[in-house]
Amino acid sequence: MAFEFSLFSVLACLCLVVSAAQISLGAVLCLLIVAGLAIRAYVGVPPTLKGNMLPRRYGGKRFELIAMPVNHFGEKVRFCLDLLGLPYEETTYCGILNILLFGQSVPQLNDRQSCSHIGNSDEILRYLYGLYSASNKAAEAFLKQTEATLEWELVLNKLGHAIQGWAYYYLLGKGFSSEFALVCWGVYDEKCPLVQRCLMKACTAPVKAFMRSAFKLDRSSLRDERKAIIDEALTRVDAAVGPDGKGYIVGDQLTYVDITFASLVAPLMANGFLFQDPCLWARGRFRSFAEAGNRGTARTLPPEVQVFEQDLARRPCGKFVTRIYNSYRSKIL
Image (cartoon, rainbow, N blue to C red):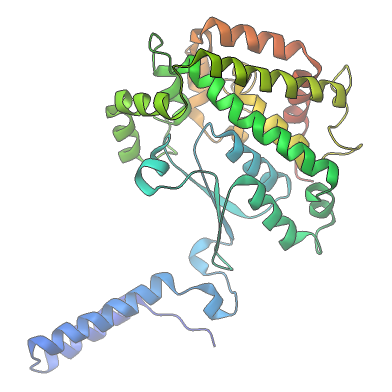
């Protein structure tokens, strides 16, 4: 049986009871506990106790995506949610504060209807496939896992982590300004909470030191190993999509593997995606990126990253990323 508590009615009744009778301190405390439980029920009764009815306060948005602005695994999930037209809203954290403050990495997906919490982009897509494959033909075809897609998942997961380490080697270099990283972390974007933005700005130096230590950015040999992983993956995608980049990575139609690769590589093509106006990344959610592009932020990238971006844009895999974003980023399957 469905039930709702009105916060104001609970408080009003409590005031009436207290004013109408002489009540001991212990009784008042008991009433406060009861009122607190009633308020907690009002704001947080699990929908599973109400027959899986989504509470009205969510405005029909069943899912909550938790990500950060330039989080390529988060963009992978965001891109897929948009393509499938699924109802969600996003909570954006500034930089790595979700790790430092809550001990959780991003992306994460909260299913508000089933009270499920899923981390890791691969598991999120599997969860969505389980929910929608039987009722949504587009979702079934797009998210379906095969031996080939699972093999590519392994390749692309290695690619994603290698991109993080290789790019941060330059962006967080001791002699390079932190400004580019701050833009990517959302320090200047209104979608990130103001308190987090201020905290990240104030703690730039220790956060940078932490990141350099966590990613072992002092080791040039590890940088080269990561670059080799990137090159190997890009070469495989070159062969899969054809010389003009007009094919697909698996089969002859769009799958989540194509979206995964495009989302992982797009941050390395900052001039083409992150800092364009309008911005294709995240469907233009982060206005500060377009503003940074207008300020010429991308031109301040380290020379090694700029040369890599130019070479990538000319490769079949780079043309493929451009095609995927231009053709699908504003589309619903």
